[in-house]
Length: 402
Image 1 (cartoon, rainbow, N blue to C red):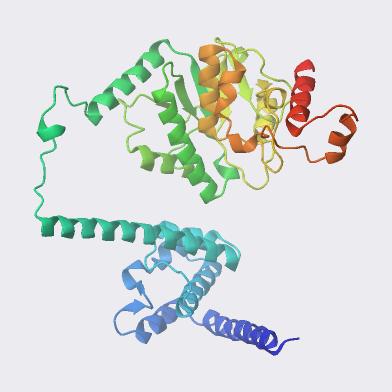
Image 2 (image 1 turned 90 degrees about the horizontal axis):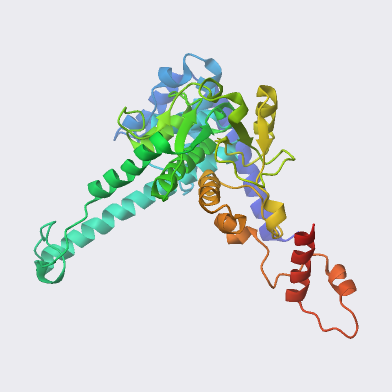
């Protein structure tokens, strides 16, 4: 073994041993004495770069649980050591971030989450710095601040300004019309117990995009967010993104009731990718249900189990019938992609137009040869000059015949 490699290996092993010894000693301390130790180490009332105001409320986070108290001590120690080693650790943490760190089991997961928070913090600080530099440059050049209504060449225009509030009122008016005369679409928000906090945040963002894409469409759905508990993680994040989804004047039906209490059972059709029945013909009288769930790890058939338990009709999009999937790409679609497919299918009834919203990275390219090169060689005759494009067209013709 090379001497430099051996030295690095011994250094890492020694570092782990020292860290474990410190961890054992720290866990033996009461939590309040541990905080006193950290604070006394720095007379400027900070732990490294972490302000004391950002140290969490111990009782609020641990609820008097000694196991969580020990884990919190380990997390604070880890952050302090990583900061001294020059790792990318945020300088400020919110109470929700502390709760997320406590919920994570492994050290690597906590390190990844701290890196994620650090990147967000750096993005905000860079934006703030750029704004300050622009303000300084503007003051140096003595550029006058123009009035918000002055725009166009020399501030002159023949057109009336269309303000953001005007556009919002117009789009909300379309949703109000859909609530009176449009077709209903249900989003089942009852999957929070199966998602991690990060997946719930991702789900909330997809719900926001789903609402936005539906509002922008020429013929929107009358959306129903069912099983939407206000205390659930995804709905709380959704409320932060839209600010006023629970106001009575907001054009969105969001309720804690089940869709079984709102619609006739014979009209409900649960869209799940795990069933066998394909949705070949769009039914304008049906009430389609989309499960609001982001599952990046397990991909379990939870929506199929729920539909079977409730005795509902099921269907899946005929993706394999109309698309040739590329290698290494998953067949899962986001919530906003699902609603765009359904909106265009409702409007045109043409699957080729509706499925244009499937990301192109998931579809096999025209000149992409199938992974089984032997099949390509067998189909190629001696006298015929074939190309990867011809082979791809043969595959499409076979699928169309089926």
